[in-house]
Amino acid sequence: MTGCRVSLDEQEHDRQQQRLDDQRAAIEEVLNEKTDERYQSLLDDPDYVSEALGPDGFIAPNRRPGIFFDAQNRAAETEFEQSLANAIRSEDWLELGTLLGTQAKEYLMRQARNHVDANYE
Image (tube, rainbow, N blue to C red; front, side):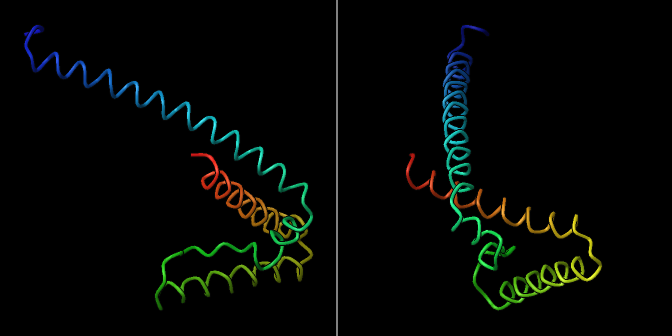
């Protein structure tokens, strides 16, 4: 059955699929490198860092419109603000730094990914 047309077609399909997977992996590496480069350059820009640490840096969990999702986003933002206030109130500087650092990194990485997606196809 190895010489059967179906088997040959399946083998060719597998080879094509492997080539596509290899191309995707190569592209992904380049895009990841470009994203990291952009992220590093954003870290050197004080305007972006200030934005990332402020309210603009908060990333809402739901990007879809609608009353239900808006309510979830408001609740998440309120919870985050309360976590910040509690960290300051209890003088838990490690928690405060972790909260703000995570927010800033996620914001800057999102900005970097968006830039790379828009400019490197």
